[in-house]
Amino acid sequence: MINGRKRGLLIISIIILVSLLVILCGSLFYDNIRNKGRTKSAGEDENQVEIELVYAYQNAQWNSAIEATVRNFEKKYPNIKVNYEVNYEDKVYEDILIKKIARNELGDIVQLKTPEPYANSDTLGEISDEVKNLVKYTYDVGGKTYAVGAVESTSGIIYNKEIFERYGLSVPQTYQDFLNICKTLKSKGIDPIGVGGSDLWHMEYWVNHFFRTDVLSKNPEWLSQCSEGVVSWTDAEVIQMLADLKNLFDAGYVNDDWQTTRDGNLPYRMAEGKIAMMYTGPWTSFAIQKLNTSMELGWFYVPGANGVTYAGDNLDTFWSVTKECEENPDKYDAAMTFLKYFYSEQNYTLTCEAICSFPLTKEWIATAGVPFQEETERAFRSSDKQIATYIGNEDTPVDFEKGMLLLLRSELKSEVSVTDAAQHIQQLWDSCEASQEANQ
Image (cartoon, rainbow, N blue to C red; front, side):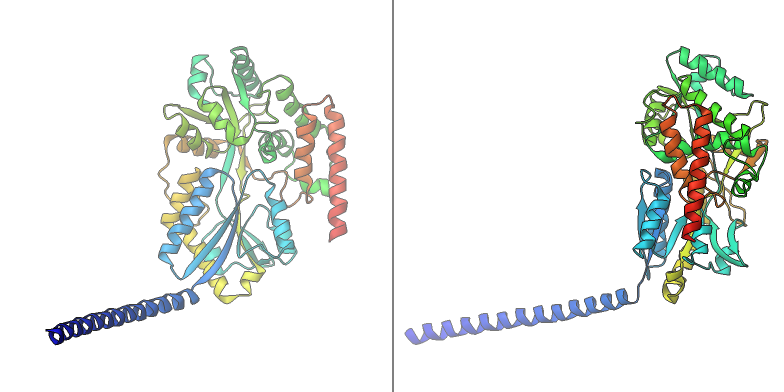
């Protein structure tokens, strides 16, 4: 009886032992298979090329378009990883780039506003013929292309059509018409113009508008001639420009809190009917209509005193590659592959539609724009003249644009006369030029 019990226990123990061995072997086999898979994945990662993309947060739509481009690109090219870094709008983008260069962190593909100083300092690599031949606007030096235009855009007035209709207002035909509109709106308790002066770059809109209308319209070479000493910031045309700018603020045609208002806050005020107009890019319409889906928006360019409209032709968004990227064949090939994908018909069409911009590819791209986008492009093409020159381009000394905007933002709220302001601007120009020459 006892022997039978022992024999039974022995059989049970053997069964348990065999089961444990089977489980252990199965686990070891599974781990071996899994580790092989991991080794294979690691091998694939080793073959993956990583590139760095540095760009500016110009607006929410541009940011979303870049993120979508990267996401779709990586799906199509899993062997290329794009690490992107967005630099936000509350900073001066050029200041960020200077710091990145000092730390050797400029990356591989970089968005630039003015490629010239970077090309002159041997910071940029050459764009391949295959990429440059896709685009009709490039930056070239000595037969080599160092930057390709990303998109073409414009800036002007977005206005609330319902408010205009309510008070019998129509698109102005002269600058005096525009001032009359502002006067009427102010009398109705509505801020005629929204200004987001807390973001320094927002001040570019009105400053460059009056610079185009009062100065560049008479002398397209004004900035380059200023460097040569032919013209000055104290000339009559500049005094008129500053007087027109100051008058908008002195007359109370902009929101009282413009110095502390962010650009990103203006779409909310427009959607709520608190402001009737804002100087901006057409992409802002998306943010406004997202907040108020029933709001109908219009677009126009502020005309000069003689009724002539000078549209800002914004050709200040470029793609470049760094010298360091060019010297690494794998990274350079990956960067060129990314740029070719950026300009591919499907991706580029979606990008242009997303930011309400105009294509720069040699091959025609058909964008299925919304009515507002079509209205914007019609106004741009039918304007009397498109001017691409702006304060801050390659003819402007380093740091002058930032310094001028800071100066004007301060003095527009003070009792400083436009004559004194002009003298301060000329002194700033001279100082920036001297500093630039000393650093060359």
